[in-house]
Length: 107
Image 1 (spheres, rainbow, N blue to C red):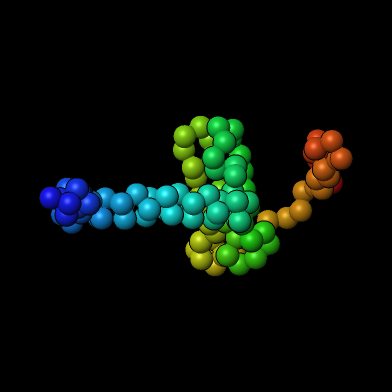
Image 2: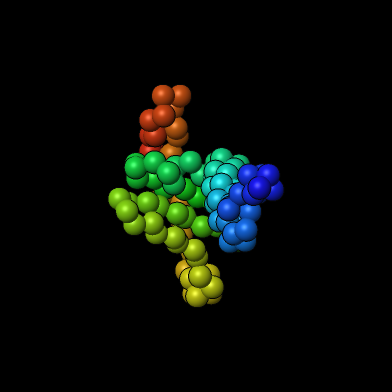
């Protein structure tokens, strides 16, 4: 009779271990996602505001990522655009002031 008091019904249920492992895995996955978002300074993705982000500016693999409402658009220059032979020209200069305002001066 003493053995029955020490032994619980939960000990005989092997599936309860799987449920606990699932909980631990979910907590780990959420912690990993939060760590990656903060590491790569992508906290803008979590906000409700619209934004534009440029990855690898001025390089061959540059990407422009914009968010408008619920839609996220990615623009990557394709090889066809580079081979077409058309190039842009400088049309002005943009300056960002200390207060965050951007001023465009056409040439």
